Image (tube, rainbow, N blue to C red):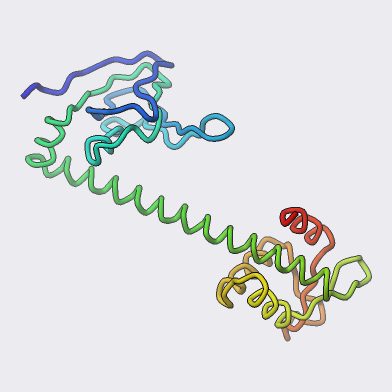
Length: 211
């Protein structure tokens, strides 16, 4: 079995591209590498590998699928090239290496779960805000600054029945909108929590999203 090969990549060189088949991973000895993913607007930077012994490209050796990102050297970089055969031997015989791989994969799973959770929360909040805008336009009472005052429990019940959010998700959406300063309690309801004030700008913004 061949030992890992050392390669030097000049700044700007693409090490592999998203969608490519892969049969090797890389361990950074020096330099810096960016991992980028295609988006509608071009590319998004996922991560920069710039610490010695950081590694990348291992997923293709684990699941056999094409590269999920593009890797580009941003500085002259020295890389240790690890083939599938060497990777398997390291996993089986080098506990420190195996533990590092497991730790990095666990961190990525946590990061992915967090990103998914944030997307779910943002979707819930957006749906809540669209429902709140519709409710305020139909049932709100205009006050001195042009905002609309609505009865909180009535709005929540209406959103649950008309938008399809659960009571818990509706409360979640309301909480986030209030933390972001988009909706406020009416001054007279600071303690009783009976009425909310919804600005006209909020209503216009979320009505446009529904159009």
